Length: 60
Image (cartoon, rainbow, N blue to C red; front, side):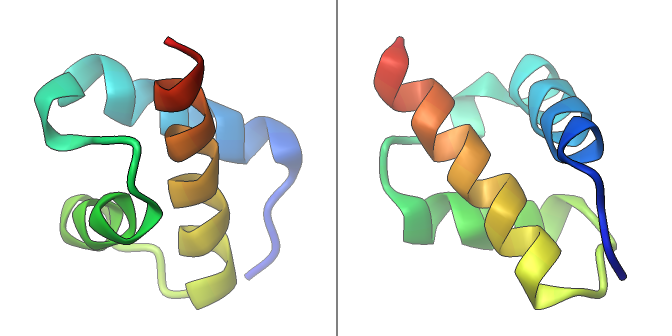
């Protein structure tokens, strides 16, 4: 499964707005949370979403 950057951002923003308490500044923690909250089959796409969320949490 390939995903456009806009899709990664959209999914990441939606997860952050719906479950802000579930995410931290740690990539591994976020990756586990993304795995539980989504049904994305691709490891690469899950990692990209978790990375995006981690960067967003680090900025705030």
